[in-house]
Image 1 (cartoon, rainbow, N blue to C red):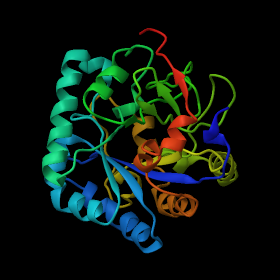
Image 2: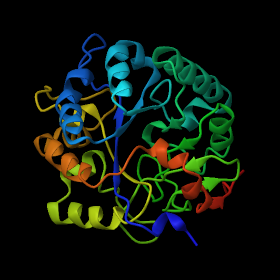
Image 3: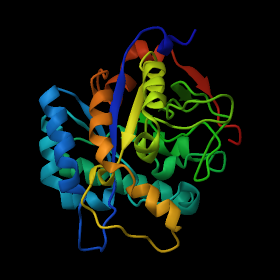
Image 4: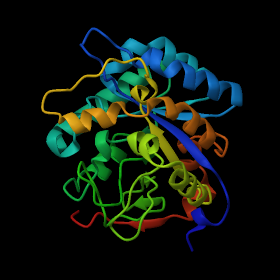
Length: 282
């Protein structure tokens, strides 16, 4: 029996700390996050923040303050690139560099990892083992549906354990079979009609290990419109649309949460209830 489904637990708030600046010298992510983190602090909500390693030195004071307040800091890759693009050898190096860097800055090495773009996919069978070998306890890197960026439709939708012992928290999705939408995260959370968001919330909060994700730019209502090189006009517009809704929607989800992903991943009772899954190409 999958004990991760047995009790009503809540939705953990997670934030992928990455930048979406107009220039390399303009780092808006710190200020963009301030209203959200202040509101979570006021509500007594513990969040899990996955930080891109390259940005960590720019945000040392902020990370230190949040960690001291009880929030969890994890690694969102040393660089924000697809795992398949990095390759196994370079990925192992980036994992070690990122974990060591966060450990040096915070005094404690992170136990959680989230792949950029949820790019732990069928094309990266080496990833779970490398993440575990680097010293991480859990991953939150799988989108268990077909998706235009990166998807792993064969993967379980509930939290599971890779055969190497690494706990995986896949993205909660709303849908059937390999089709679905991660309604509780990112642009999907901003763009989805309210009834769809509330439906996804009600279903997710009855599973231990459910989470919502966002990015600093999701809350940056004053950022001037821009397009990155190679980015379509439509995709760029979607990254800016309805940002004024994001804070309210995340805070509503925050009212259901029960702790960090790391606290669950290290809970023996939770781990004992997880099914083991082997990567199909390992």
